[in-house]
Amino acid sequence: GMTCFEKNENWASCAASCEEGDWSCKTLGNRTPYAAGCGWAGKSCADTRLCCNVGFSCVVKDATWTACTQTKKKSTWITQNVPIPAGWDGTIVGGGRDEYKIGPAAAGAKVMGTSLYCFMAFLPDSYEVGLHDVAKENKASIFACDEYDVFHSWKSAKAGWDTGEATLSNTDVFINVWDNMLNTGKFMKADWTVKVDADAVLIPDRLKAHIAGLRPPMGMPIYLKNNDMDPGMGNNGFLGAIEVFSKQAVQIYRDNKEGCHQSLGINAGEDGYFKG
Image 1 (cartoon, rainbow, N blue to C red):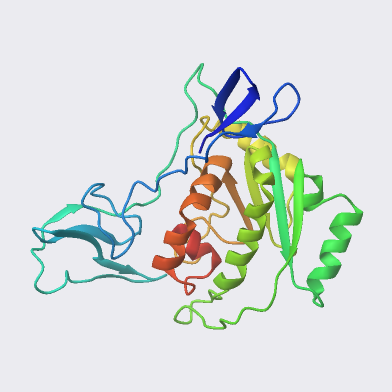
Image 2 (image 1 turned 90 degrees about the vertical axis):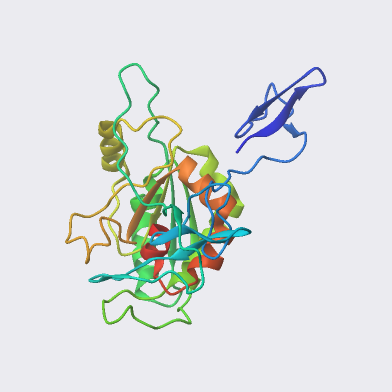
Protein backbone atom coordinates (compact mmCIF):
# COMPACT_ATOMS: atom_id res chain seq x y z
CA GLY A 1 0.00 0.00 0.00
CA MET A 2 2.99 2.34 0.16
CA THR A 3 4.50 4.66 -2.45
CA CYS A 4 7.94 6.26 -2.36
CA PHE A 5 7.42 10.07 -2.27
CA GLU A 6 10.11 12.66 -2.74
CA LYS A 7 10.50 15.43 -0.18
CA ASN A 8 13.42 17.11 -1.89
CA GLU A 9 16.49 16.12 -3.87
CA ASN A 10 18.07 14.71 -0.73
CA TRP A 11 15.20 12.81 0.88
CA ALA A 12 12.34 10.48 -0.02
CA SER A 13 10.24 8.15 2.08
CA CYS A 14 7.51 5.52 1.75
CA ALA A 15 3.99 6.50 2.77
CA ALA A 16 0.37 5.68 1.93
CA SER A 17 -0.21 9.24 0.66
CA CYS A 18 1.53 12.59 0.44
CA GLU A 19 0.41 16.17 1.05
CA GLU A 20 2.30 18.88 -0.78
CA GLY A 21 3.88 21.64 1.23
CA ASP A 22 7.30 20.84 2.58
CA TRP A 23 7.28 17.82 0.24
CA SER A 24 7.37 17.84 -3.56
CA CYS A 25 5.36 14.57 -3.44
CA LYS A 26 6.93 13.38 -6.68
CA THR A 27 6.43 9.62 -6.91
CA LEU A 28 9.56 7.53 -7.26
CA GLY A 29 8.48 4.16 -8.62
CA ASN A 30 5.14 2.40 -8.34
CA ARG A 31 2.94 1.86 -5.29
CA THR A 32 3.28 -1.59 -3.73
CA PRO A 33 -0.20 -3.17 -3.86
CA TYR A 34 -1.77 -5.03 -0.97
CA ALA A 35 -1.54 -8.78 -1.63
CA ALA A 36 -4.69 -10.84 -1.17
CA GLY A 37 -2.71 -13.46 0.73
CA CYS A 38 -4.99 -16.21 -0.54
CA GLY A 39 -5.98 -18.06 -3.72
CA TRP A 40 -9.14 -17.26 -5.67
CA ALA A 41 -11.71 -19.83 -6.73
CA GLY A 42 -10.16 -22.28 -9.19
CA LYS A 43 -6.69 -20.80 -8.74
CA SER A 44 -3.60 -22.18 -7.05
CA CYS A 45 -3.31 -21.99 -3.27
CA ALA A 46 -0.11 -24.04 -3.01
CA ASP A 47 1.84 -21.16 -1.48
CA THR A 48 -0.80 -19.60 0.79
CA ARG A 49 -2.82 -22.73 1.72
CA LEU A 50 -5.77 -20.36 2.08
CA CYS A 51 -8.69 -19.54 -0.23
CA CYS A 52 -10.12 -16.06 -0.64
CA ASN A 53 -13.70 -17.23 -1.10
CA VAL A 54 -16.09 -18.33 1.63
CA GLY A 55 -17.04 -21.98 1.22
CA PHE A 56 -13.87 -22.94 -0.64
CA SER A 57 -11.04 -25.21 0.52
CA CYS A 58 -7.44 -25.53 -0.59
CA VAL A 59 -7.32 -29.10 -1.94
CA VAL A 60 -4.58 -31.25 -3.46
CA LYS A 61 -5.39 -32.56 -6.93
CA ASP A 62 -2.05 -34.24 -7.65
CA ALA A 63 1.68 -33.66 -7.23
CA THR A 64 1.59 -30.62 -9.50
CA TRP A 65 -1.68 -28.86 -8.64
CA THR A 66 -3.24 -27.64 -5.37
CA ALA A 67 -6.14 -25.28 -5.85
CA CYS A 68 -9.23 -23.69 -4.31
CA THR A 69 -12.38 -25.67 -4.95
CA GLN A 70 -15.85 -25.18 -3.52
CA THR A 71 -16.72 -27.53 -0.64
CA LYS A 72 -19.75 -25.68 0.77
CA LYS A 73 -22.55 -23.80 -0.98
CA LYS A 74 -24.43 -21.26 1.10
CA SER A 75 -27.66 -19.41 0.43
CA THR A 76 -29.78 -17.44 2.89
CA TRP A 77 -31.39 -20.51 4.36
CA ILE A 78 -29.32 -23.53 3.40
CA THR A 79 -25.69 -24.68 3.56
CA GLN A 80 -24.88 -27.67 1.36
CA ASN A 81 -21.70 -29.72 1.16
CA VAL A 82 -20.12 -29.84 -2.30
CA PRO A 83 -18.04 -32.94 -3.15
CA ILE A 84 -14.39 -32.54 -4.09
CA PRO A 85 -13.99 -33.13 -7.85
CA ALA A 86 -13.65 -36.76 -8.85
CA GLY A 87 -10.11 -37.87 -9.56
CA TRP A 88 -8.52 -35.42 -7.12
CA ASP A 89 -6.23 -36.64 -4.34
CA GLY A 90 -8.67 -34.85 -2.01
CA THR A 91 -6.30 -33.86 0.79
CA ILE A 92 -7.49 -30.55 2.27
CA VAL A 93 -4.50 -28.42 3.24
CA GLY A 94 -6.35 -25.19 4.07
CA GLY A 95 -9.74 -23.56 4.32
CA GLY A 96 -11.39 -20.43 3.02
CA ARG A 97 -11.45 -16.95 4.46
CA ASP A 98 -14.35 -15.85 6.61
CA GLU A 99 -15.24 -12.85 8.71
CA TYR A 100 -14.11 -12.53 12.32
CA LYS A 101 -14.61 -10.02 15.10
CA ILE A 102 -11.88 -7.49 15.82
CA GLY A 103 -11.72 -6.31 19.42
CA PRO A 104 -10.89 -2.82 20.66
CA ALA A 105 -7.32 -1.56 20.67
CA ALA A 106 -5.29 -2.51 23.72
CA ALA A 107 -4.52 0.12 26.33
CA GLY A 108 -1.84 2.44 24.98
CA ALA A 109 -2.15 1.14 21.41
CA LYS A 110 -2.98 3.45 18.50
CA VAL A 111 -6.69 3.81 17.73
CA MET A 112 -8.16 4.50 14.30
CA GLY A 113 -9.57 7.98 13.74
CA THR A 114 -13.17 8.82 12.89
CA SER A 115 -12.94 10.99 9.76
CA LEU A 116 -15.47 9.99 7.09
CA TYR A 117 -15.45 9.98 3.30
CA CYS A 118 -19.03 9.34 2.21
CA PHE A 119 -20.50 8.75 -1.22
CA MET A 120 -23.95 8.27 -2.69
CA ALA A 121 -25.12 6.93 -6.03
CA PHE A 122 -28.62 7.85 -7.14
CA LEU A 123 -30.73 7.02 -10.19
CA PRO A 124 -31.51 10.05 -12.38
CA ASP A 125 -35.21 10.64 -13.13
CA SER A 126 -36.24 8.71 -10.01
CA TYR A 127 -37.50 9.56 -6.51
CA GLU A 128 -33.86 9.35 -5.38
CA VAL A 129 -33.15 12.74 -7.02
CA GLY A 130 -35.48 14.48 -4.56
CA LEU A 131 -33.93 12.68 -1.60
CA HIS A 132 -30.45 13.72 -2.77
CA ASP A 133 -31.57 17.33 -3.19
CA VAL A 134 -33.12 17.53 0.29
CA ALA A 135 -30.00 16.07 1.88
CA LYS A 136 -27.75 18.51 0.02
CA GLU A 137 -29.92 21.53 0.85
CA ASN A 138 -29.86 20.64 4.55
CA LYS A 139 -26.19 19.62 4.62
CA ALA A 140 -27.33 16.24 5.88
CA SER A 141 -26.40 12.62 5.16
CA ILE A 142 -23.18 12.44 3.11
CA PHE A 143 -23.02 16.23 2.88
CA ALA A 144 -22.20 16.38 6.61
CA CYS A 145 -19.17 14.08 6.22
CA ASP A 146 -15.57 15.29 6.10
CA GLU A 147 -15.33 14.44 2.39
CA TYR A 148 -18.08 13.33 0.01
CA ASP A 149 -18.90 12.49 -3.59
CA VAL A 150 -22.06 11.88 -5.59
CA PHE A 151 -22.33 9.49 -8.54
CA HIS A 152 -25.11 8.52 -10.93
CA SER A 153 -26.29 4.92 -11.12
CA TRP A 154 -28.59 3.17 -13.57
CA LYS A 155 -31.10 0.37 -13.63
CA SER A 156 -29.34 -2.96 -13.35
CA ALA A 157 -29.30 -5.22 -16.38
CA LYS A 158 -29.65 -8.04 -13.87
CA ALA A 159 -33.18 -8.31 -12.49
CA GLY A 160 -32.83 -11.77 -10.96
CA TRP A 161 -33.55 -12.61 -7.36
CA ASP A 162 -31.59 -14.98 -5.14
CA THR A 163 -33.96 -17.99 -5.15
CA GLY A 164 -36.85 -15.82 -4.01
CA GLU A 165 -34.94 -14.43 -1.04
CA ALA A 166 -35.42 -10.77 -2.03
CA THR A 167 -31.80 -10.02 -2.84
CA LEU A 168 -31.78 -7.90 -5.98
CA SER A 169 -28.75 -8.58 -8.18
CA ASN A 170 -27.52 -5.01 -8.62
CA THR A 171 -23.86 -5.96 -8.48
CA ASP A 172 -23.01 -4.75 -11.99
CA VAL A 173 -24.19 -1.24 -11.06
CA PHE A 174 -22.39 -0.95 -7.76
CA ILE A 175 -19.08 -2.33 -9.10
CA ASN A 176 -19.01 0.54 -11.60
CA VAL A 177 -19.89 3.10 -8.91
CA TRP A 178 -17.12 1.78 -6.67
CA ASP A 179 -14.64 1.93 -9.55
CA ASN A 180 -15.55 5.59 -10.09
CA MET A 181 -15.18 6.26 -6.38
CA LEU A 182 -11.77 4.60 -6.21
CA ASN A 183 -10.59 6.63 -9.19
CA THR A 184 -11.14 9.87 -7.26
CA GLY A 185 -8.66 8.75 -4.58
CA LYS A 186 -10.53 10.82 -1.99
CA PHE A 187 -11.08 7.81 0.27
CA MET A 188 -7.38 8.02 1.16
CA LYS A 189 -8.02 11.32 2.98
CA ALA A 190 -10.33 9.75 5.58
CA ASP A 191 -10.18 6.94 8.12
CA TRP A 192 -13.47 5.41 6.94
CA THR A 193 -15.37 5.13 3.67
CA VAL A 194 -19.17 5.13 3.90
CA LYS A 195 -21.44 4.21 1.00
CA VAL A 196 -24.98 5.52 1.55
CA ASP A 197 -28.17 4.86 -0.40
CA ALA A 198 -30.26 7.95 -1.13
CA ASP A 199 -33.18 6.54 0.86
CA ALA A 200 -31.08 5.62 3.91
CA VAL A 201 -30.64 7.90 6.94
CA LEU A 202 -27.04 8.65 7.86
CA ILE A 203 -26.12 10.91 10.78
CA PRO A 204 -22.33 11.27 10.45
CA ASP A 205 -21.71 12.60 13.97
CA ARG A 206 -23.58 9.64 15.44
CA LEU A 207 -21.52 7.22 13.32
CA LYS A 208 -18.32 8.93 14.46
CA ALA A 209 -19.34 8.55 18.10
CA HIS A 210 -20.10 4.88 17.50
CA ILE A 211 -16.69 4.32 15.89
CA ALA A 212 -14.93 6.14 18.73
CA GLY A 213 -16.69 3.90 21.23
CA LEU A 214 -15.49 0.78 19.41
CA ARG A 215 -11.82 1.87 19.66
CA PRO A 216 -10.82 0.05 16.45
CA PRO A 217 -7.08 -0.73 16.26
CA MET A 218 -5.07 1.40 13.87
CA GLY A 219 -4.36 -0.07 10.43
CA MET A 220 -6.86 -2.95 10.46
CA PRO A 221 -9.14 -3.85 7.52
CA ILE A 222 -12.60 -3.61 9.10
CA TYR A 223 -16.23 -3.40 8.07
CA LEU A 224 -18.94 -2.41 10.55
CA LYS A 225 -22.05 -4.53 10.95
CA ASN A 226 -25.16 -2.48 10.29
CA ASN A 227 -28.13 -4.55 11.44
CA ASP A 228 -29.16 -7.02 14.11
CA MET A 229 -31.66 -8.96 12.03
CA ASP A 230 -31.89 -12.72 11.66
CA PRO A 231 -28.47 -13.72 10.20
CA GLY A 232 -30.12 -15.07 7.05
CA MET A 233 -32.35 -12.07 6.36
CA GLY A 234 -29.72 -9.54 7.45
CA ASN A 235 -26.77 -11.11 5.60
CA ASN A 236 -25.14 -11.74 8.98
CA GLY A 237 -25.16 -8.07 9.90
CA PHE A 238 -24.31 -6.47 6.56
CA LEU A 239 -26.90 -4.97 4.22
CA GLY A 240 -26.23 -2.48 1.47
CA ALA A 241 -28.11 0.65 2.58
CA ILE A 242 -25.16 2.00 4.60
CA GLU A 243 -21.77 0.31 4.24
CA VAL A 244 -18.84 1.37 6.42
CA PHE A 245 -15.26 0.27 5.69
CA SER A 246 -11.92 1.28 7.14
CA LYS A 247 -9.43 2.84 4.75
CA GLN A 248 -7.30 -0.31 4.89
CA ALA A 249 -10.28 -2.47 3.88
CA VAL A 250 -10.95 -0.24 0.86
CA GLN A 251 -7.27 -0.33 -0.13
CA ILE A 252 -7.25 -4.13 -0.05
CA TYR A 253 -10.41 -4.23 -2.18
CA ARG A 254 -8.90 -1.73 -4.65
CA ASP A 255 -5.78 -3.84 -5.14
CA ASN A 256 -7.62 -7.17 -5.45
CA LYS A 257 -10.97 -6.29 -7.00
CA GLU A 258 -10.27 -8.13 -10.25
CA GLY A 259 -10.06 -11.37 -8.31
CA CYS A 260 -13.42 -10.56 -6.72
CA HIS A 261 -14.99 -9.82 -10.10
CA GLN A 262 -13.68 -12.99 -11.72
CA SER A 263 -14.48 -15.40 -8.91
CA LEU A 264 -17.76 -13.95 -7.59
CA GLY A 265 -19.40 -12.64 -10.74
CA ILE A 266 -22.42 -10.33 -10.44
CA ASN A 267 -25.13 -12.65 -9.10
CA ALA A 268 -24.65 -12.16 -5.36
CA GLY A 269 -26.17 -8.71 -4.93
CA GLU A 270 -24.15 -5.79 -3.61
CA ASP A 271 -24.01 -6.80 0.05
CA GLY A 272 -23.45 -10.49 -0.77
CA TYR A 273 -20.64 -9.55 -3.11
CA PHE A 274 -18.69 -7.73 -0.42
CA LYS A 275 -19.20 -10.58 2.05
CA GLY A 276 -17.52 -12.93 -0.49
